[in-house]
Length: 305
Image (tube, rainbow, N blue to C red):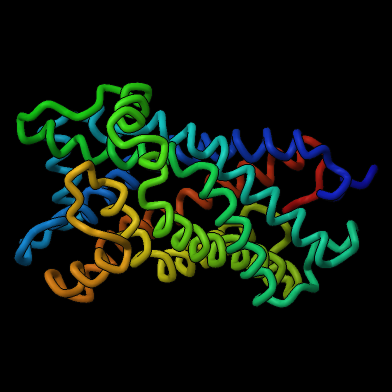
């Protein structure tokens, strides 16, 4: 049987296409969980005093009751647009940087220590997030708009194009990158946990003969990477979400101010608001993405990630 081509020999365009397709599938399947997480993180944002805690089930019930089932997909289109840039850049960037450091196209980076993989994953995530930040901003704003609809108010935006246009007109080009600092901080932590942990865990499972390079190994690796990336990134995700949801009347001056006010007004636990919805999303998201991506690579005659 002809051996599959290694990543270094695979056309970059092909890997970009496969990563984009896999990300679109994963995002569509898990988007309602992401929306739930965002609403939970915004609950109490800007409040002068602490606010009544609300759980994931309560948030989902409220959205379904007040906005209908379609409300669970508010902001899906900009989320997909974001992943058409974000995911290919971070995934292909990680592979290429890993291969460059190893200096061998046939090694695939298995010999790299976990700490090095973590730094490579974090750096790849930062580059990807800087590029995709405007689409991420539009997604967060549209997800937050659902709360206005549930209160009988008119949403700020009717769609991603209008959201992009209004933000550009009222806040300028710089406004499209509002919250970019907490954004890239989160991206570094997420990808440090996700890419490095998935890569390392999968090869550990295979090397220890716990499983072959199949869906079982991919599932175990995705669960571990989801937990690691959620734990590391949740505080930065809360800050990022609140910073990006601000309009012209800003509640927080910067990321540090947001962090301090959140802890002072709502307690340290507020930094992990939406932890379980985030983990519940990252687990399935990574499972769907990695299983799809690995399968697409196999069909294309490319070696596994």
